[in-house]
Image 1 (tube, one colour):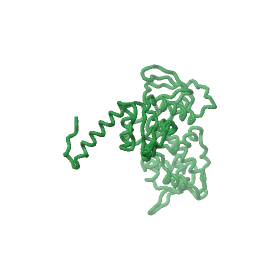
Image 2 (cartoon, helix red, strand yellow):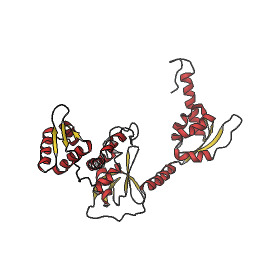
Image 3 (cartoon, helix red, strand yellow):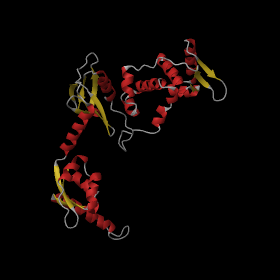
Image 4 (tube, helix red, strand yellow):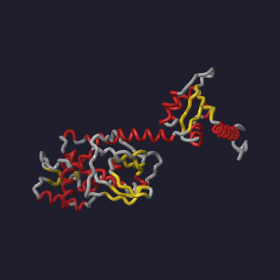
Length: 326
């Protein structure tokens, strides 16, 4: 543990030119007293580190000194390519590995390029979870599954109460929800319990497997499988444009391909795939008067009822002028 911290301290000084004890303590998550002891240990080991005295001083390496301890091991190299999603790395238990990889990469840069990581981080940030997702902790099964994915180890665990042994190919984070991909199936990580990785065994990974392509294909299939109902809707020109915003993305191509018209009022009619009448009701309310449901009758009746209640609320011209039907 201390050896890793000493190397991190050395790489920090090499990457940043000089740092105060307080800055080093914050970065390494130790006390300033520990920093002073670690600097002394480095000096005793022959590292040319010295203290700048006075205001704004700190620790520095002798000008021109560069450590050769910058080679990335496999785990660090893999984590480095995920450094744009720091929270996901922490959730998978890879935060320390990624931090070490970033330090080594920064230390290997030429002096003129050492501000590149900070410059890039101020210009691009990826916020993966969806809005209003809260600060819920990651699923308990995520860390052991991540270790198994990285080591190509089979896992055994309960999935919805049923014992399964799987070859975990990869993990996907979608709108704040984690998914595990095997060679042919996708599972929600939060539905696993009691996961154990068989670290004494390794499965043979299909070298042709492409996680991104596999996820895209399976996610599209899943989205389409939910669209079991069709509704016929007549849309104004504005309503037609709003399809791109309000309709399910998996239904959009089919809806546009089915369009007929425009009629004498400039309206087009589309057959819109939806998950259910209830879901369609919520979606089509957002179109307001720019969409008219022609079929099925029960959906048309639901929207007509909503329109009547809206008219009762707003038709009187002022708050409290109209009673709202129960």
